[in-house]
Amino acid sequence: MTTEQPLTYDAFVALAAADPAVVGLVLKGSRAHAHMATRHSDHDVYVVLADGATTELSRFAGHRTAQLDLVVCSLDEFRAAGMPGFERYALARARVVLDRLDGGIARILAAKAGLDADEAFRAADEWLDAYANSLYRSVKNDRDGHPLAARLDAADSIGFLLELLFALDRRPRPYNKYLEWELARFPLPGWDTGMLLDAMDRISGTGDVAVQRGLFAQAEAAARRAGHGAVLDAWGADLSLMRPPPAGS
Image 1 (cartoon, one colour):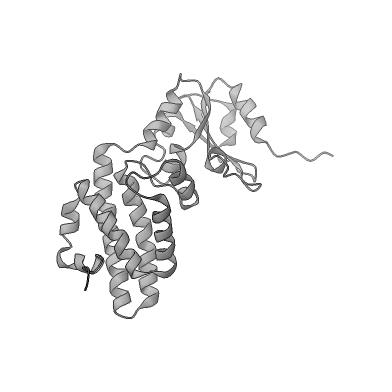
Image 2: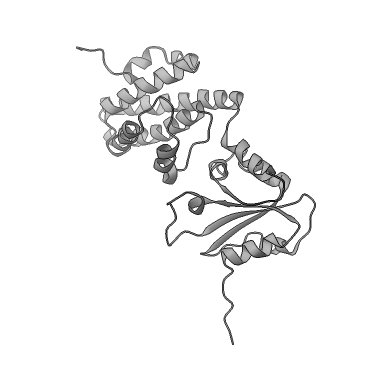
């Protein structure tokens, strides 16, 4: 008796490429990010079928092993994936393995990688307010003698800040795993990557109020330049608690 071997990535790609119902194969995750894969990394693949097509490959929908994770979907479903949603970043940095649409699969991925102006502006407004809220709570809790709450709010604020900064650059926020990878290759305009990562590391680890305020000062300036001053002004006098103290005070 022989034991059936798990389906490998290469074997599946060959199988899918031979099926005319398949119009695209897209690799996402660590295998699509240069130098990020480890011996534990599987291959995460979208199998894109022509709308209305029938194929034996549908039996692989939901297939998941330590080596291979498959999503089988129609072209329309692929266009909608992550729009909006958590999957957007994964697809924004995904790699095209097969494109039978004369670049159509690549164009769909490119559309996921960039937020349009209205979407980005609305998102930045929301994330800016959420960031200010967590920052304010953190600083206030530190002032009032609640160190654990202060650190937890500080850590929360970093996620909101990242959403804000990437929305200001009209792109989806990377997953935490890929943050350093992303910034090393695609820095945020106007930000020193090393400074930003160091500040976020200190804030998430210690809740350092001085570092939080210094980072907020830069974020406030960037947000106002992008037209989001009304969100900040709605905080009124509470902004003074978030900002660095005046020189000499």
